[in-house]
Length: 202
Image 1 (cartoon, rainbow, N blue to C red):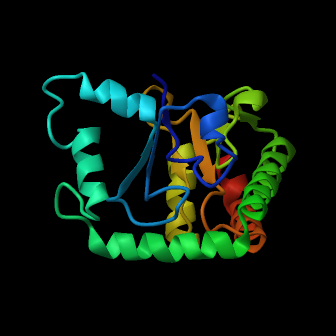
Image 2: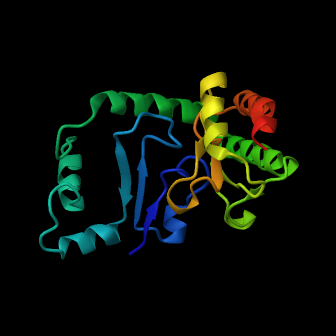
């Protein structure tokens, strides 16, 4: 069985579930769907349901069969996050209003703009370009910039938020999102504001 995490790619790039033979697609509300955290979404193939039926001790919260039984009754296994469900319905309306292909194109174009900024400033991408995300750019700090203070100053002075790396790559990377509701105007504004303070940290 194949289980795919699409939390930052769902609605950003095409995911031909049936063509690729994906059994379970998982996503969350808090990234590409641009909603607050708290809502998990998933799609399950018949093959995965059939496999789940053979498993003893499936638990409760992650039991696909329990979810299916409740779904058929228009219910959920536990109390749902109703405000987020209303938010999701609104978001889906806006996605279909924009158009799926147009949404994919928008993310692709914004991602290219961020990549061009990275190259222009002399930075590099952390992953190889062919593996880079279309919704988030992870920038390698090859110029030895003070990432922590750059991120802090952007937040305090410009009221804009990007994030530095964490764990083993803390201080070695920073991340720029172009997912969800970002537009050409919002991305260009972010990059221009970053340009204003960048020289202080190089």
